Each structure stands twice: as structure tokens, then as C-alpha cells.
Figure: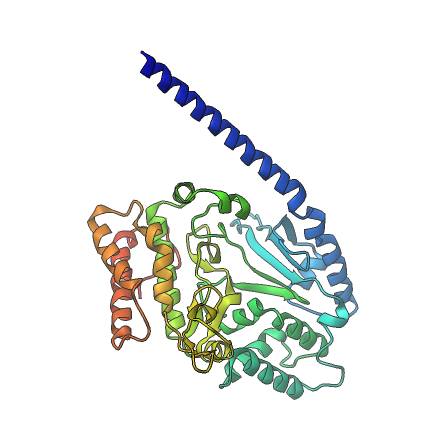
Length: 419
């Protein structure tokens, strides 16, 4: 009897403890949102941005393929502020679909971004009097600095083509100033580099330094949108449970994973040489309402030559000093106290580490063991292995084939097709 009372007393203490902890969590969250988070009016300046952008457009300082829709017809609607930094504005928007008797054109969802800078900073170059050849030389030098030495003429031509807003075969001063301002943003620069890819958000247009890309349904791999602060204080078990609960169905996850594997192939066999994804995590991957994958963190993608040069410039005392982003790692040469620049891990290993639990959770029993076997091999890939390329190819193809056997008959998946 005494034992039963003791047990009940112990349980009541546990309940009280849990209630106290819950209230402490609620209090901390409320305090953080009230004191620690910037006010929305500090982060969201769409009315100021619009007024400045449209004023510059009307004065002929800037131009763009979406200026008329943004400033004159107001076809582009701003729906939600997503800014986390007042100097870099991010919004969700849409262009309303057209309804008529024949068909209904669906709404087009957008992501709108702009660096908030004075005109004399953003649009200072090129100066008046510069020719189109001068602008071409500016572009070539800029790409060499950003991408490393090499032939970037194809990217220059693509940039000039996109910059020619009125399609007259020339680039005016306003067009050149607009494009130069856009190219200062690394995400836009890398969009130009990978503009043919289906696995990054499509560029819909721009107006001055504001650029508009394809919107996504979810902005992270698991689809969970818990605030970063909340996520950071959750215990590991709760993090995993909340992620899996918010994740799409397994067949949708398989479709997303196929898209990621195809992106790895693109990066491995790019016309510009190998490219490296230096920040592969759940926040850097989104997907559309068709579950087509969209890589969101383009700031942390590097051409291999540029990445090697960047790593070699790093002074170091230990290997952990030789990292770009979170995932592009090299070794420290203890004699020279500089990083060697030798890149240790391929993109496939980074992606496999990211999707390991994501893909195995509730995978069909018929292929689960085979998927895990390939993922276990994948997360051990090292570029210094003599047969790394062969292993890389076998694992990549095996994973894609395993997944396609499960999703190939699902006709609702639109864009991704087996290769």
C-alpha cells in the first residue's frame, strides 16, 4: 500500500515538473518573440521598396522584364513577407490566373527578392559613355573573379541575352546598370550559371535589382516550418518526430529524392566542370506542389576551380579550419599552415547524409534494405579513393533505379523523368 502511494506521489511530481517545464518554454518563446525578434515593420519594407523601384523605373535609371507588371498594371501581388534581414527583402507573391470560357490559367506563385541599397550604390556601374563592348569586358573580368579563371563566354552571352529587355539586340545603359546590380547578388549570379537546370527555381524576371523566381510549396525538405529558435531547443527525439510528422508521404519523398540525385548528376557533369554544394541541409531544399525538388541555397554552390582556390587561401592549424559553408572540406598542411585545397567529399555523400533518415522512414519493405545498403556505402564516399568515380556512378544509378520502380507509375508526377 505504501508503495502504491509512493508511486502516485512520484507521478504527481513528474506531472508538476512537466507543467513547469512547459510554462517555462512558453514564457521563453513569448519573451523571445516580443524582445528578441525584429519588428515586422523593420524587416518588411515592401511599400518603400516598391516606391523607390518604380520611381527609378519611371526616371529611366533602371529597367526590367517585370517592371510594367510590378509598377503599372500591378499584376504582381505581394502576399507574405519572409525577410529575416532588413537589408535583403524577401516576399512571397503571385500573378493571378486568367479566367475565360475556354480555360482557366492557374495562379503563378513567386518569390521576390531585393537588396535594399541607395541608387548611387546599386546602380553606379557601368558609367555613362561605356559601350556594349566595355560592358562585355566588365562581365568577363567579373566572372573570372567570381568563378575562377576559364572560358566563361557562354555565361557572358546568356547574361547579355537576359539583360536585353526590349530584345533589340543591344544593351542600353539602363539595361546594363540593372544587370550589373543583379549580378552583385551571388544567388542571382549562380542562377545565371545554372539557368537551364530544372532543379533550381526558374527566373521569371526582374525590375532593377529586384528579381522574381518560381515560388515553392515548402521551403525545407521535411515541410516543417517551425521557427528556428523553437527547433534549436527541441530534444533530438522531438526534432526527429516533428520532422517525420510534417514530411510528405514516402512516395512524394522518393520523387523529391530522385530530383536531388539528378541535381547531383548535373553538378558532377556540368559544362563548366564539377560544381560543389557546400551547404546541404534540410533548409536548403524546397519543393513545388508537384513535389519537384528546388535547391534554394544557391549562395553556397561553387565551381570546383574557384572552391579549390578559395580553400588554398585559408590559413589553418587543424583540418576543421579548412571548410567552406558546412560541407566543402579540405585538409590542413601543417608545414605551410594553409589548406591543401583538395576537396574531400563528393556532393553525393552530402546528399545521402541529408536524406538518410528522411528516405528510410516508412520506406516499402521490399526495397528498404537495398536502399539502406546503398546509403551506407554512399556516406563513406571519399574523393581520394582510387575507385571513387566507379562507386559514385554505381550508387547513384542503383538508388535512382530503386526509387523509380516505386514511383514510375504515379502519373501525377509531372516533370521528373528517368534518365
